[in-house]
Amino acid sequence: MSLDFTAIDFETANSSSASACSVGLVKVRGGRVVDRAGWLIRPPLGHDEFSEWNTRIHGIRASDVIAALGWADQLDDLVAFAEDDHLVAHNAQFDMGVLSAACIASGLMCPEYSYLCSLQVARKTYHLDSYRLPVAAMAAGFEDFAHHDALADAEACAAIVIHAAKRHEVETMSHLADAAGVTIGTISHEAALAKVRARAEKQERALNRAMALS
Image 1 (spheres, rainbow, N blue to C red):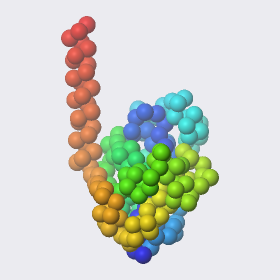
Image 2: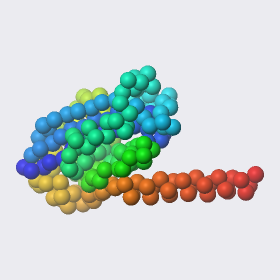
Image 3: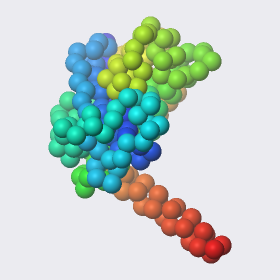
């Protein structure tokens, strides 16, 4: 099997996509996990307030990341681990949004990656009442992990894709996407900037409407 990819999971400090406070990475080669890494992140300035809701979910507090490297100082480590792999994440739109938004907020170029969403793959592979990560991972035989720990979530995500590839009897990421009927997405700096501009324009329109009604 030549199923090669890096599974990734982010936790965030608050509702801002740029507020990455931890990351988990799991490298898969030939359908087997060969390496793992995870670390805390000090979110970019302006996105570094920890909300009670987010802390309740993942347990990370502002005091936990004081000594952690900031996004700008650890992005190279993330890229070095992932190399030129396809990235895989559960609800990948969220994690790719974090990757791109944190880069933009830090004044960095967003690296280009192709990615596959394990949530979409799970929906086309299993018949479940829910496709939340713990449920989909259980269907793949990966149970009893610390949900919302970034590294544990990345491992669960990797397990889903490995198991799904075996279910569909395929050996590459592109063949898995074809067999499951899902799309391999891409992220880039240009796309990240476009999202930031669109969000700013939406906020400006909302502000203008509010002012017109005041």
